Length: 109
Image 1 (cartoon, rainbow, N blue to C red):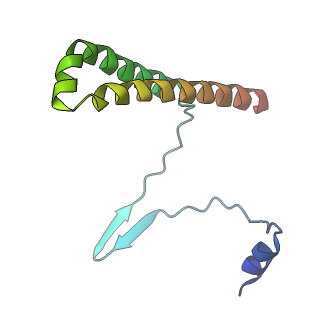
Image 2 (cartoon, rainbow, N blue to C red):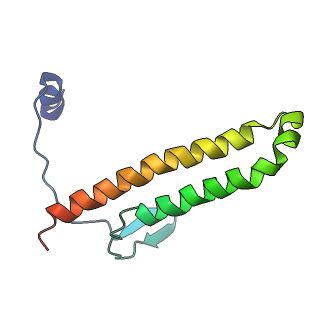
Image 3 (cartoon, rainbow, N blue to C red):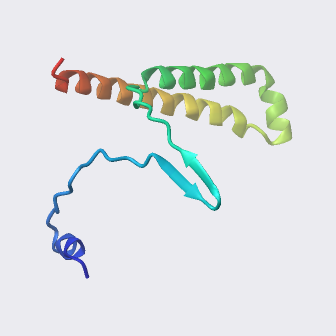
């Protein structure tokens, strides 16, 4: 058992050295793939959640006129899935907004 696993089993936290030496190429079989040096995006997810929630709402509204047909064919779950997606999207949107606000308060800029 390694020292990290022993400490983990005892409930203590082992400090990890953070390094920035990233792999620049991968060799898989007889091919070599070069990894591009791209900075990570600073995306908070708010716009993504807004668009996704709006798509679920549009899907729900678009299916309302077909309620009878959906019920007759046993596909009424489509309507409720859209409603659930919209509701969960609202929770996700609020989560992303709070996260963005917390990150803005922690940022030294």
